[in-house]
Length: 334
Image 1 (cartoon, rainbow, N blue to C red):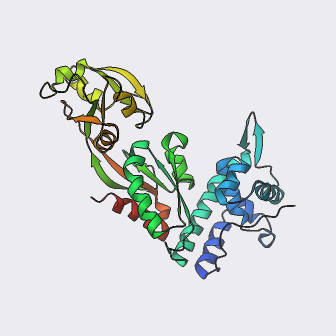
Image 2: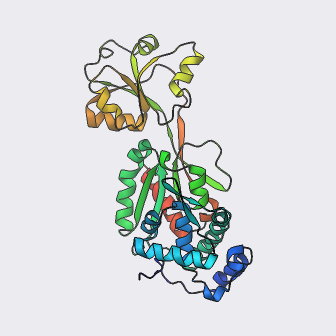
Image 3: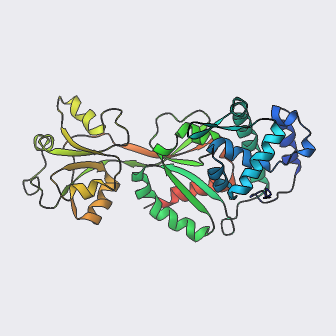
């Protein structure tokens, strides 16, 4: 039978760690009601992964355990907590009512413990084997990742960056639960309990194919711009984009002939058609070089946007998270 082995290194129980355990255990029903000496606290990391991933396989992969070892951890948790925790619902696994109640309590407990442990154990990039989970759009991946990965590989060769698209995870839930460490994107008001730090201001450029009818006819006018068929990159069709809002203010509109969900698709289509794509300037410049496209300034005033990094306040003083945020910021310096 497989046994559960904690994927986390053993950390000495300092006075700070002990005080934190005592404070939060007194407030958490499922531990307070049992004999703590009989409970393996390493199971808490397994419980966190199971409640967030709702899959034994994904939870095991997340904390570095095989499926048999994670199944064994789930069996032990069910025995300790007198609850199945995860039950089959259609084609997926769902949390039991008791597990739903446990999840926010557990998130708060482990968040506090991680803060204490981070202060007790400094982050050493050269030897660290930590994994960071990030959310980003593909535009930001294109702009940030090439230099960021180079910096991280040089300074911390055993660190892993797990970057996911916004569509895969809800931002507020992911960062609030601790499933996501850092979000790179465009934000209005940060979610409660989160911090945001501006990385760069972005504007727009138009890209067209070499030989497009718009070229060689002098400055691109607003009239000729709105007469062209356009391509719009948008993961969510929830409303008009920045260009369409600006045109509406002038009493104008354009024909969007093609919607795509990813920036990497746009230049492939533009290069073989007369479509015009108005893209974030950094992406436009990069894709123009890679695909032989031509750049044109948009003939309508566009307000641009700010790209920021967003994190939960519980990681404010975490040495490893502070290091990651610094790497992101430094990778964007020109």
